Image 1 (spheres, rainbow, N blue to C red):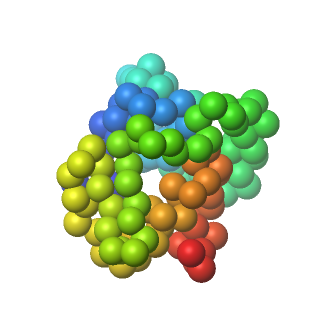
Image 2 (image 1 turned 30 degrees about the horizontal axis):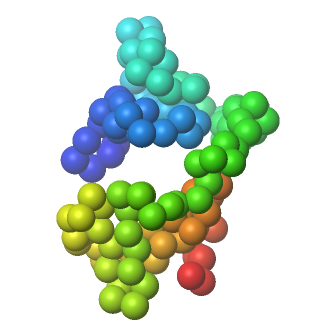
Amino acid sequence: MLPGTDGLTLCREIRRFSDVPVVMVTAKIEEIDRLLGLEIGADDYICKPYSPREVVARVKTILRRCRPRRDLLALDAESPLIVDEGRFQASWRDKLLDLTPAEFRLLKTLSQEPGKVFFPRAAAQSPV
């Protein structure tokens, strides 16, 4: 379960600005749910219960097909995201983001390498 939203809404929002791979892992097993997830833009849809090894295999398969787009890898001066390390602040489209210190560090880590796939543990433990 996602706090405050659902996977379909999140996937739809991601697809509005990115073509990053999306794998949905969910308890919704009905065919209509699977079809909707895939039609909205998920690259794969895995129903619970699942084997962790299967999830890893599916993610590796998707990543093999992905090639980073070099033209999208660097944030430029026209990026709507601004991360100000000196003030420990970030803004999106000139609106200041209300971030905890951990959220700021994570956003900074992710914004320094756009397009890179991070695994949760590695991104959270980044010394940045």
